Image 1 (spheres, rainbow, N blue to C red):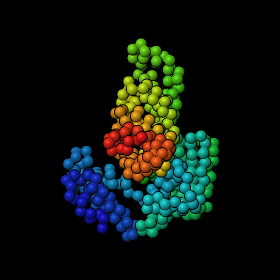
Image 2: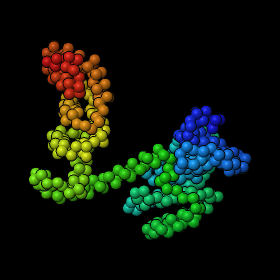
Image 3: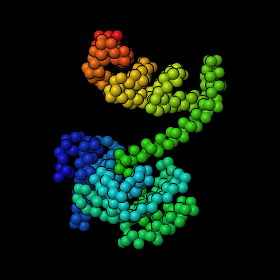
Length: 391
């Protein structure tokens, strides 16, 4: 029924996301028809679809669009198990795991690690939560670090039937003969190989973010060593008005940005150190002070305002947030203060009037809290007349 979704045919370009989505529904209908009736209707479908022409020359027609955008998105049992097996290298799953519309039950699994490399060999039962169909497949996945991953999925009559292949693959891995591991996987599991590109898109992005985070940490460490080694020379060149070599400037920029981001994400901001870092970064402009730092600052400021909302008398949090706002709000880093300002506005209707009342009654602690919150509000852009006097 979904393949008849009308919005797919209200657009004038066959490769548009709406029409491609509808063709994906049709591909699922073809897949189910093949499973149910044993008849492959795809060739005839593509013959007809090929008559539909794209307005974009490189997409040519419906047949090309199908192979370019639709076919790679089709999920079958091996691809679902491949996703589970690959993602299990980066995340610890329990005995039963739900991923999107599939449930995976681990029947057998072995995981080996040597340095950056990992090998997963196992057998899983996958069940579709939509059709309630299920299948049991075996897998072998070899990860060599960074983006390098190779694996395959195959069907064996029983767990015992897979044991000789698993033992051979594991033995080759334990001697670090990775070329042999890949050869054995290909030999025993067939020629349909899977890589990180085989992951469902959302999970692929999450895992790649983790891989990139490790690469970023490595780069930051190397750049920090360069900055520490040549720091005195860079400061001398800067004081003399001489330009820094591009490599040294890049290392310094990245180290500066990393240090600023760390101050905003370590759970307690050293305001004096942050101020020094921002002074060093000022002359570099957007090379260091970019929206990436704005995002880190936004997260830290939102954490603090939520903490203050839970305990408006927490002067440490109030003073830290005020200091961060004073340093960062003037900078061109795309700082989004919507949640911070909205939460503070709620405090002006609850906590501030209460502190004001108690301060009038002579409560010194309430007066101090009120003064701190009023100063924070002004730093966050609230007009003085919208706030209590703070005295």
